[in-house]
Length: 341
Image (cartoon, rainbow, N blue to C red):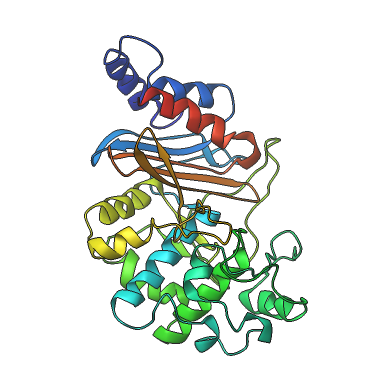
């Protein structure tokens, strides 16, 4: 029996009696763990009330070192909502405008990016090409990505006309944060987001960073597949489910941003063909039965992450795993959301 599993079993016994038909969220989570599809941390809440908050398995599979709730996981692209919040904080302070051109702040960008705005970087309509499936080396940095962009023959499309997910765009946003704040990306997030929200187990991973007892990444065959690059803005953050829940609550109560600025995170642009994009500022946005959903997933090396938020009924689902490709993220999400109806 793993740590927290006894507690989880007691919760299971309680919540099973709360529904008369179908499976409960706890039963779904238990199934994924018992079938070997999940090793990690899960938190489910409604209206700030936690329904499930537990961990399963090991942070180090080889040495059988058990997980606990304070062990951080690499969250990959769940860093993008945090980058978007940081940029929006700067806009609220009058330090930038979403309509500013990126080159106003980052002078060493290629000439072909001159008409690209901060807002277009936030919602992935800038046309900047994505480095992720091209640049593979360990220790890859933001500088490496900018150098690679100089070797490209231009944007993929005219800014504002299409949606195309680009990690490169969020690296540029990280550089904008650093240029304006005169801090590193890590320092700015710590001072303006992590410390105010008491997200004490959340860290930006930089060269030389030591994170005590962080989760080690593995593949489905339990072979080490750990995080090994150094880009920021698009990724680079380690966190826990409980820290991300603190962020969720802060956004719902306008603790970090004003109500007006918070709403801007969820506003999607209209594209050239008249259709609305499905991505706001750091969040994929969709409507389900009249409810607005803001969500993001992350995946790199042996890590997968999920942050799903129903902005109307207050449901939040957070899942972090360090046995990445064993976890079918969207199957899990579909199964869990079915129980919440």
